[in-house]
Image (tube, rainbow, N blue to C red; front, side, top):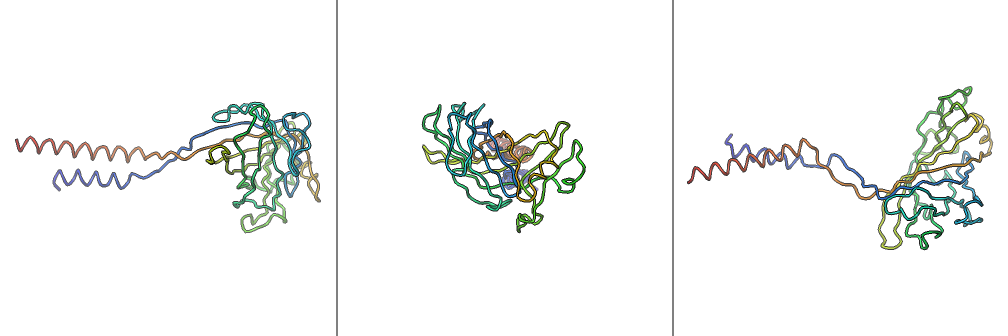
Length: 263
Protein backbone atom coordinates (compact mmCIF):
# COMPACT_ATOMS: atom_id res chain seq x y z
CA UNK A 1 0.00 0.00 0.00
CA UNK A 2 1.33 3.48 -0.91
CA UNK A 3 2.08 5.80 2.02
CA UNK A 4 -0.62 8.22 0.88
CA UNK A 5 -3.17 5.42 0.72
CA UNK A 6 -2.11 4.21 4.16
CA UNK A 7 -2.55 7.68 5.63
CA UNK A 8 -5.97 8.04 4.04
CA UNK A 9 -6.98 4.62 5.36
CA UNK A 10 -5.91 5.55 8.90
CA UNK A 11 -7.70 8.89 8.65
CA UNK A 12 -10.89 7.32 7.29
CA UNK A 13 -10.92 4.66 9.98
CA UNK A 14 -10.40 7.29 12.67
CA UNK A 15 -13.30 9.37 11.36
CA UNK A 16 -15.55 6.33 11.20
CA UNK A 17 -14.72 5.43 14.77
CA UNK A 18 -15.14 8.96 16.10
CA UNK A 19 -18.43 8.28 17.87
CA UNK A 20 -19.56 9.35 21.34
CA UNK A 21 -18.60 6.61 23.77
CA UNK A 22 -19.00 8.53 27.02
CA UNK A 23 -21.30 11.36 28.03
CA UNK A 24 -20.93 13.71 30.94
CA UNK A 25 -24.15 15.49 31.89
CA UNK A 26 -23.49 18.99 33.19
CA UNK A 27 -24.77 19.53 36.72
CA UNK A 28 -26.83 22.72 36.68
CA UNK A 29 -27.94 22.72 40.30
CA UNK A 30 -28.28 20.67 43.47
CA UNK A 31 -30.26 21.26 46.64
CA UNK A 32 -31.30 19.40 49.76
CA UNK A 33 -34.76 19.03 51.28
CA UNK A 34 -35.27 18.73 55.02
CA UNK A 35 -37.66 19.38 57.88
CA UNK A 36 -40.56 17.43 56.41
CA UNK A 37 -42.54 14.30 57.24
CA UNK A 38 -43.88 11.47 55.11
CA UNK A 39 -46.27 8.60 55.82
CA UNK A 40 -45.06 5.42 54.16
CA UNK A 41 -47.55 2.78 53.04
CA UNK A 42 -47.65 -0.20 50.71
CA UNK A 43 -49.57 1.89 48.18
CA UNK A 44 -47.81 5.24 48.22
CA UNK A 45 -46.17 8.18 49.95
CA UNK A 46 -48.27 10.72 51.84
CA UNK A 47 -46.20 13.85 52.41
CA UNK A 48 -47.21 15.79 55.51
CA UNK A 49 -47.47 19.52 56.20
CA UNK A 50 -45.13 20.76 58.93
CA UNK A 51 -46.07 24.03 60.66
CA UNK A 52 -42.42 24.82 61.39
CA UNK A 53 -41.80 25.52 57.69
CA UNK A 54 -43.09 29.10 57.75
CA UNK A 55 -42.34 29.98 54.12
CA UNK A 56 -44.75 27.25 52.95
CA UNK A 57 -47.61 27.53 55.42
CA UNK A 58 -50.12 24.82 56.23
CA UNK A 59 -52.47 23.78 54.88
CA UNK A 60 -50.90 23.68 51.45
CA UNK A 61 -52.57 22.69 48.19
CA UNK A 62 -54.70 19.54 48.43
CA UNK A 63 -52.65 16.35 48.36
CA UNK A 64 -49.30 17.94 49.22
CA UNK A 65 -46.83 18.28 52.07
CA UNK A 66 -44.35 21.08 52.54
CA UNK A 67 -40.58 21.09 52.23
CA UNK A 68 -37.69 23.36 53.17
CA UNK A 69 -34.70 23.92 50.88
CA UNK A 70 -31.10 24.19 52.04
CA UNK A 71 -27.56 24.18 50.61
CA UNK A 72 -28.62 24.92 47.00
CA UNK A 73 -25.94 25.31 44.32
CA UNK A 74 -25.64 26.29 40.68
CA UNK A 75 -28.48 28.17 39.04
CA UNK A 76 -30.61 27.57 42.14
CA UNK A 77 -28.13 29.03 44.65
CA UNK A 78 -30.61 31.82 45.44
CA UNK A 79 -33.10 29.25 46.79
CA UNK A 80 -31.41 28.96 50.21
CA UNK A 81 -34.13 28.95 52.89
CA UNK A 82 -36.81 28.71 50.22
CA UNK A 83 -39.76 26.42 50.87
CA UNK A 84 -42.45 24.77 48.82
CA UNK A 85 -44.83 21.88 48.38
CA UNK A 86 -44.42 18.28 47.24
CA UNK A 87 -47.26 16.13 45.90
CA UNK A 88 -48.32 12.82 47.41
CA UNK A 89 -47.59 9.72 45.35
CA UNK A 90 -49.72 6.70 44.57
CA UNK A 91 -47.66 3.76 43.39
CA UNK A 92 -50.56 2.77 41.14
CA UNK A 93 -49.64 5.80 38.98
CA UNK A 94 -46.77 3.69 37.70
CA UNK A 95 -43.56 2.11 38.95
CA UNK A 96 -40.64 1.43 36.65
CA UNK A 97 -42.50 3.04 33.72
CA UNK A 98 -42.56 6.64 32.45
CA UNK A 99 -45.55 8.74 33.53
CA UNK A 100 -46.27 12.40 34.10
CA UNK A 101 -47.10 14.16 37.36
CA UNK A 102 -46.92 17.90 36.75
CA UNK A 103 -45.95 20.31 39.52
CA UNK A 104 -44.66 17.48 41.69
CA UNK A 105 -42.35 19.94 43.44
CA UNK A 106 -43.09 23.67 43.52
CA UNK A 107 -41.81 26.63 45.51
CA UNK A 108 -43.90 29.06 47.49
CA UNK A 109 -42.05 32.28 46.68
CA UNK A 110 -40.45 33.08 50.00
CA UNK A 111 -36.92 34.52 49.79
CA UNK A 112 -36.79 34.33 45.96
CA UNK A 113 -40.03 36.23 45.45
CA UNK A 114 -41.19 34.72 42.16
CA UNK A 115 -39.81 31.18 41.77
CA UNK A 116 -38.46 30.42 38.30
CA UNK A 117 -38.61 26.62 38.49
CA UNK A 118 -41.14 23.81 38.84
CA UNK A 119 -40.46 20.08 38.83
CA UNK A 120 -42.56 17.46 37.01
CA UNK A 121 -42.14 13.83 38.06
CA UNK A 122 -41.69 11.27 35.30
CA UNK A 123 -40.31 8.04 36.79
CA UNK A 124 -40.24 6.17 40.12
CA UNK A 125 -37.53 3.53 40.41
CA UNK A 126 -38.14 0.12 41.90
CA UNK A 127 -36.29 -0.80 45.06
CA UNK A 128 -32.91 -2.40 44.53
CA UNK A 129 -33.00 -5.11 47.20
CA UNK A 130 -34.59 -8.55 47.44
CA UNK A 131 -37.71 -9.24 49.51
CA UNK A 132 -36.02 -12.36 50.90
CA UNK A 133 -34.95 -10.84 54.23
CA UNK A 134 -38.04 -8.68 54.76
CA UNK A 135 -39.50 -11.20 57.21
CA UNK A 136 -36.27 -12.39 58.81
CA UNK A 137 -35.45 -11.85 62.48
CA UNK A 138 -34.02 -8.31 62.81
CA UNK A 139 -30.25 -7.90 62.54
CA UNK A 140 -27.99 -5.01 61.60
CA UNK A 141 -26.95 -4.96 57.96
CA UNK A 142 -30.08 -6.62 56.59
CA UNK A 143 -31.64 -5.17 53.44
CA UNK A 144 -35.16 -5.43 52.10
CA UNK A 145 -37.36 -4.17 49.28
CA UNK A 146 -40.88 -5.33 50.13
CA UNK A 147 -43.12 -6.80 47.44
CA UNK A 148 -46.90 -6.49 47.29
CA UNK A 149 -49.38 -8.31 45.08
CA UNK A 150 -51.20 -5.03 44.44
CA UNK A 151 -48.08 -3.64 42.72
CA UNK A 152 -47.64 -6.48 40.21
CA UNK A 153 -47.62 -5.19 36.63
CA UNK A 154 -45.81 -5.95 33.35
CA UNK A 155 -43.14 -3.43 34.34
CA UNK A 156 -42.98 -4.79 37.90
CA UNK A 157 -43.69 -8.53 37.70
CA UNK A 158 -42.51 -9.19 41.26
CA UNK A 159 -44.62 -6.40 42.73
CA UNK A 160 -41.57 -4.67 44.20
CA UNK A 161 -42.13 -1.36 45.96
CA UNK A 162 -39.77 1.62 45.53
CA UNK A 163 -38.65 1.34 49.15
CA UNK A 164 -35.10 0.31 50.07
CA UNK A 165 -34.84 -0.68 53.75
CA UNK A 166 -31.56 -1.21 55.61
CA UNK A 167 -31.32 -2.27 59.25
CA UNK A 168 -28.73 -0.40 61.29
CA UNK A 169 -27.40 -0.81 64.80
CA UNK A 170 -29.82 1.82 66.08
CA UNK A 171 -32.86 1.10 63.91
CA UNK A 172 -33.29 1.32 60.16
CA UNK A 173 -33.27 3.60 57.14
CA UNK A 174 -35.46 3.66 54.06
CA UNK A 175 -34.73 5.36 50.76
CA UNK A 176 -36.46 5.79 47.40
CA UNK A 177 -35.41 7.41 44.12
CA UNK A 178 -37.18 9.10 41.24
CA UNK A 179 -36.55 11.39 38.28
CA UNK A 180 -38.26 13.86 36.01
CA UNK A 181 -38.06 17.27 34.35
CA UNK A 182 -37.38 20.73 35.71
CA UNK A 183 -39.20 23.53 33.88
CA UNK A 184 -37.85 27.08 33.73
CA UNK A 185 -40.89 29.34 33.93
CA UNK A 186 -38.96 32.35 32.63
CA UNK A 187 -37.52 31.07 29.36
CA UNK A 188 -39.36 27.76 28.81
CA UNK A 189 -36.23 25.60 28.88
CA UNK A 190 -36.17 22.21 30.57
CA UNK A 191 -33.58 20.06 32.32
CA UNK A 192 -33.54 16.60 33.87
CA UNK A 193 -33.50 15.93 37.58
CA UNK A 194 -32.97 12.97 39.87
CA UNK A 195 -34.01 12.84 43.51
CA UNK A 196 -33.14 10.52 46.38
CA UNK A 197 -35.15 10.64 49.59
CA UNK A 198 -34.06 9.04 52.86
CA UNK A 199 -35.86 8.52 56.18
CA UNK A 200 -34.63 7.13 59.48
CA UNK A 201 -36.36 5.16 62.21
CA UNK A 202 -35.30 3.91 65.63
CA UNK A 203 -37.14 0.69 64.82
CA UNK A 204 -36.00 -2.30 62.79
CA UNK A 205 -37.59 -2.33 59.35
CA UNK A 206 -39.47 -5.51 60.24
CA UNK A 207 -41.43 -3.43 62.78
CA UNK A 208 -41.99 -0.66 60.22
CA UNK A 209 -43.26 -3.19 57.66
CA UNK A 210 -45.65 -4.61 60.26
CA UNK A 211 -47.17 -1.13 60.49
CA UNK A 212 -47.63 -1.11 56.71
CA UNK A 213 -49.44 -4.44 56.71
CA UNK A 214 -53.19 -4.51 56.10
CA UNK A 215 -53.33 -0.96 54.77
CA UNK A 216 -51.47 0.73 57.62
CA UNK A 217 -48.80 3.41 57.42
CA UNK A 218 -45.68 4.62 59.21
CA UNK A 219 -44.85 8.33 59.60
CA UNK A 220 -41.30 9.63 59.86
CA UNK A 221 -39.21 12.65 59.00
CA UNK A 222 -37.31 12.53 55.72
CA UNK A 223 -34.61 14.38 53.82
CA UNK A 224 -33.78 14.46 50.15
CA UNK A 225 -31.18 15.48 47.60
CA UNK A 226 -32.16 16.77 44.15
CA UNK A 227 -29.67 17.01 41.28
CA UNK A 228 -30.49 18.92 38.09
CA UNK A 229 -28.52 18.11 34.95
CA UNK A 230 -28.34 19.68 31.51
CA UNK A 231 -27.59 18.33 28.06
CA UNK A 232 -24.96 15.63 27.75
CA UNK A 233 -21.48 16.63 26.63
CA UNK A 234 -20.16 14.21 23.98
CA UNK A 235 -16.66 12.92 24.67
CA UNK A 236 -14.84 10.85 21.99
CA UNK A 237 -12.97 7.73 22.98
CA UNK A 238 -9.33 8.72 23.71
CA UNK A 239 -7.91 5.92 21.57
CA UNK A 240 -10.03 7.08 18.65
CA UNK A 241 -8.78 10.64 19.04
CA UNK A 242 -5.18 9.40 19.01
CA UNK A 243 -5.86 7.31 15.89
CA UNK A 244 -7.46 10.25 14.11
CA UNK A 245 -4.60 12.55 15.07
CA UNK A 246 -2.06 10.01 13.81
CA UNK A 247 -3.80 9.85 10.45
CA UNK A 248 -3.83 13.63 10.11
CA UNK A 249 -0.15 13.89 11.06
CA UNK A 250 0.83 11.14 8.63
CA UNK A 251 -1.11 12.78 5.80
CA UNK A 252 0.57 16.15 6.45
CA UNK A 253 4.03 14.54 6.51
CA UNK A 254 3.49 12.78 3.16
CA UNK A 255 2.20 15.96 1.56
CA UNK A 256 5.29 17.92 2.71
CA UNK A 257 7.64 15.21 1.38
CA UNK A 258 5.84 15.16 -1.96
CA UNK A 259 6.09 18.94 -2.21
CA UNK A 260 9.89 18.84 -1.60
CA UNK A 261 10.27 16.13 -4.26
CA UNK A 262 8.49 18.28 -6.87
CA UNK A 263 10.82 21.21 -6.07
